[in-house]
Each structure stands twice: as C-alpha cells, then as structure tokens.
Amino acid sequence: MATTAWFGDGGAARSLVAERARAGVRACGQAVVIVGVAAAGLVVPVLAVVCTVLIVGQLFDQGPLGLYAAVPSATVVGVSTLYWFVRRGAGWTRWRVGREAGEPWRVVYSPREALEQDARGFWWTGVSYHRRQEVARLVQFVRWAVRDHQVQREGAWLLANPVGVVLLLGVPMASLWGGLVFMGSATVDSRHFFGLNSQPLNLLFSTLIGGVLAAAGLSAMPWAVRMHGAFACRVLGGGPQPSRAQLTERVAQLTETRADAVDAQAAELRRIERDLHDGAQARLVTIGLTLGTIEHLMAPGQTAARELLAEAREASAKALQELRDLVRGIHPPVLAERGLPDAVRELALTAVVPTEVTVSLPGRPEAALETAVYFSVSELLANAAKHARARHVWVDVLHRAGRLRVVVTDDGLGGARMEVDGGLRGIEKRLGTFDGTISLDSPVGGPTTITMELPCALSSPRTSTSSARG
Image (tube, rainbow, N blue to C red; front, side, top):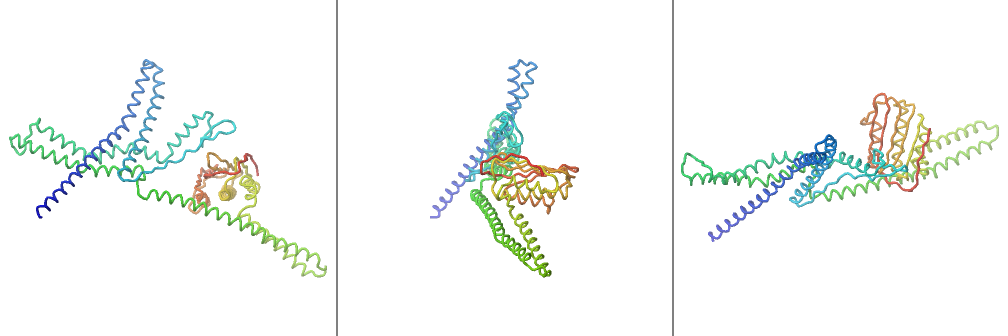
C-alpha cells in the first residue's frame, strides 16, 4: 500500500509539472504575439509613411511636385495607419485580457452627435458649419477622436505597451531564449567549467545551466503575462470585472430613478402652484373685494372703521402680491403656458440691464429641464446687473445635435470665478441633475461668456426662431 501511495503522489506531481509546463508554453506564445503587436504599432506606421513617400516620389519622377504631393499623402497614410493600430491594438489587448479573465472587457466610447443641416444647406458639426457633408463628417470625427477619453487612453497604450513589454516580459523572455540558445550552442562552442577538459562533462554543465535558465523563464512567463494584462487595465482604464454588468445595470437604474424623481418633483411643484393659484390667491382676491364693498357701504361718520377696513384691504393686496411672487418663484406661469422662449423673453423685459434674446428651438424641452434653465438664466441676469455692472446682456438659446445650449454674454467688468459657495457653482449643481455642464470665460475687463449645455430631447415639433430685446 505504501508503494501504491508513492506512485500515486508521483503521478500527481508529474501532472502538476506538466500543467505548469503547458501554461508556460501558452504564456510564451502569448508573449511572442504581444511583442509583435507592440512592435507593429510603432514600426508599421513609420514604414507606411516611408513607402508612401517613395511611391509618390517615383510617380512624379523625383520632380519638384513630388514633395508637395508626398507630404499630404504621407500625412494621411501615416495618421490613418496610426489610428488603425491605436484602435485595433487596444481592442486586441482587451480581448486577450478578457479571455484570460473569463469576463468580457466592455468599453464605452462617447457618442458621436448626428450631423444637422440648417435651412441654408450647411452642415453643423457641433462647433462649426460646413457646406460639404463629407468635410463636416471628417471634422466631427477628428474632433471626436481627439476629445474622447477612451481614444486618448488607447493612444497612450500604443506608447506604453512597448515599455511594458520590455519591463515585464523582457527578463523572462531573455531567460527562456537565452537558456535555449545556451543549450543549443553547447556542441559548437568550446566551454570549460571548473577547469575540466572533459567534453561530456562540459556539455552536461551547459545543458544544466541552459535548462535552469529556460525553466526559470518558462515558469515566470505566465506571471509576466498576467502583470502585462494588469498594466493594460491600468493604462486603458477599466478591465474585465465580474460586477461590470451589474454596475452598468445599476447605473441605468439610477439614471431612470433620478429622472422619475425629477419629474415627480416638477409635478409636485406644479400641483402646489395650482393649489395656491386656485385656492389661497382666489380667497385673498375675494377678501379684498369684500372689504372694498364693505368700505363703500359704511356710513360717512364711521371714519375709524373705514380706516381699519382700508388697512385690511391693503394688507390683503400685499399678501396677494407676495403670494403671486411666491408662485412665480415656484413655477412661473409663463413658463408653464408659453414655454422656455417666452419665459426667457419675459426675464429680458423685466431685467435691470438691457437684454437681447435669441431663441432657436425646433420644439419644447421637458418641463423639469425648462425650469432649471429658466432659473439659471434668471440668476445670471441678476449677477450681470449686480456684480458685473454690465450695460448690455445677450442671451442665446439654441438646440443642436441633441443638446440644448444657452449662452449668456455681458459687457461688464469680467473677472468672474467659479467659487465653492458661489452662485455659478449652484447653477452647476442644478444643471448636473440633468447631466448638464457650465463653462465660464471671463477675462478681467470683460466680456463675460457663460455657456450652459444639457442633453435634451425636444417634443412638440414646431419651429421657434426669433429675437427679442428688453
């Protein structure tokens, strides 16, 4: 029985050694492909540029026009080849790491906004107009590729990958291939160990040393490949994680819950506004009318009572005005009835500083978003009059490529800052509820330009493009 156990343990040990050897061989194959991908990402674009220059030069017989044709051709070919290797190299790395981890490595790029054509036939890219659709699409693509964070990480990976290969895979690969070469060259190289002149002993020592080096490199190769994968996760961002799908589902659920909460809050504010308008305001109006009627019906000699009634009627009028201001602060009636364009125009008409409004909306945003933009514009107009000492303000409201953009510009003193507890930071938090952003450009001496952008889906397909001054 002891003999059987011994043989059984020996079989398990041999199986473990064989498994580790197979893992090392697989890792060695992966390392060779990794090295090839890393080298190709740097070498092939350079070769493509050189070949393009040579081919164009031959086509123009090395003439003076060859240089003018070679430079743009080489630039286009080089940039295109480099971009291809940036995307494909990072994509292959994600696939390899995800396959080893047993989980897919999901990556999300920023969406590219659809091109829009205006009435003049020009194409809007989000920052500029172009007559030709192909040019607009190219400009939009280049702008997206430069600004997208994932593409930026992929470009960084193209440069970081060779460094990671040298630092992480270099030593195991050098040990493995060096050991194999050391063993293979033992028969053709005259080596002497410990002063021995015996060729069989020297060959044995060469085989042992080379085998140890190769075995060490083969054993360390799986670890090196895993470390290279971890390095890729750090540079490219993210990585295959078992909870990634759950996180994505959770984010979608929170987004939906936030939208429901915003809608519920807006509906509650509208309900309060209706209750105050139909209830308390109506009763105060009735009280004011009743007091006025009693005041006229009283005898002329009852002066003291008449004065008290007049004071009561005046107090009810003030309470009614305060209540109307409160209702307007909760949800302005013009915003609910006429929409954002007319509400912003009303702000311009009542603003202290002369304000010019330009609105271009092919529809109406959702009510909660309209309310957030309305109060943001109201606060910016108040800041222009109170802090900037502006003499004129311009408000532009437009919708382009699925985003609502509001630009408020004044000719005031400038020097505005996004302070921690300032009004601009409060506007930023208000817009953040809708994934909106705010940017500030306010050099000392002016002018000050504040741009608010929010993702926005419009309803009520009507066109409203007009200007107004206040």
